[in-house]
Length: 549
Image 1 (cartoon, rainbow, N blue to C red):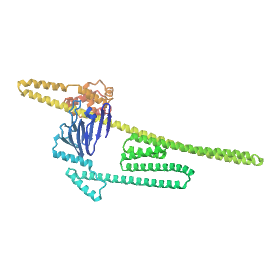
Image 2 (tube, one colour):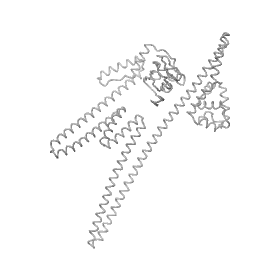
Image 3 (cartoon, rainbow, N blue to C red):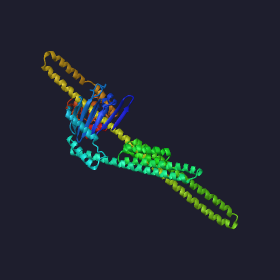
Image 4 (cartoon, one colour):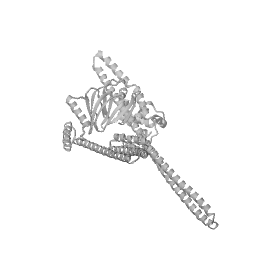
């Protein structure tokens, strides 16, 4: 899933998914009902657009088969209900009849829609099922598994799968089967360990109860109960955390999240700061693997906060100890000084010795304090650098997301321009055909055909579509027309602005001629005139200048 946006109040949203290999079944919902172009599926060979219906697709090596199951409820946008638009840069095919199918291969336009037969439908459904459920059970013996794999290979071969595809499916299922067995084994081991620990704690508790007296025994029992409860909680937390680690390392991230979150909740209940810190660290790793960078950053921030708190708490305790030592030494020095003053002859000597010792002590403590302060500063700087790095990575992710959205809009704009060209060509051909028919037809139908040709010519001259297209273009490139007007030597006409917009989309002269309903020679003349109005040197290309605006 590349994009998922949905507002339950208005039913507005957008879904963009991508499938590289495998099978997919789509049943359009409320988003597609309100706006048929809101649900698209990207495949290696092109794009599938759902328009309020149910369809199935199989993506195999270099080929995509798409089957329309049936129409859904009528939409309100005037488009044909219950349809799927299958297309790429080379062409488009509309599936609008139930149980119609088309195939699309890389480097070719989609094939024509065909009605699927009952036998073909059975094979298609079997192939869908094989791709979804071709999983080996972990409960069979080795011999049973070997026989099962042979049967599965035969079934896949009969369905039309290639040797490499069959090998890939079998290998993937065997891999998942092994991972599941490892996870189950690890979980059982942890449960067994926890049970042993529980039994041991229970035995110790019984022994303590027998050895202790009534009053004294009650106090010790309560104390022991609390200690045992703490030990039990610590072991439970460790077990849950270890299971989460196993699931994460075997790429079962959702299960890993569940166990790690349980571990953190239990650690918070018993106030186990070290376990809370470890849980936040593991959650950050799991969310990073799931590419949920926001939650990964949040848990990483919590982990760093706990570390920072522990760091300052530890340093504060050490500082208090040093302060106590220093004050104690000072008091002892004063007592010693007062004692030595009773003897006049020894007073000066003892005073000098004591003073020298005090200086050394103060110097040593000061050096020690400064050294610790320097280490604290270094750790703080390292932490700030980590936070800064995390923020930079977050910004990089946001920038990439924005770039992807711009690319998606640009691709949509190119498709829109090609649709305009196709429409114009269709209308032009139809108009020419009707004009030819008018010269050959009888007198009573001649005037009607001419009137129809005039209406089609009038439709081709409408500016509403151009206004819609230019508005769409300004959404993708908001500064283009403003920058172009500022750069131009003289004022540009509306026709020159249209030409500049189509050149910015990197369309060929042939494509532009089809959209504008002119000849390619007319496009070349228009390009020359536009070039004269722009500050372009003789070596620079017009398209390159417009692309860099």
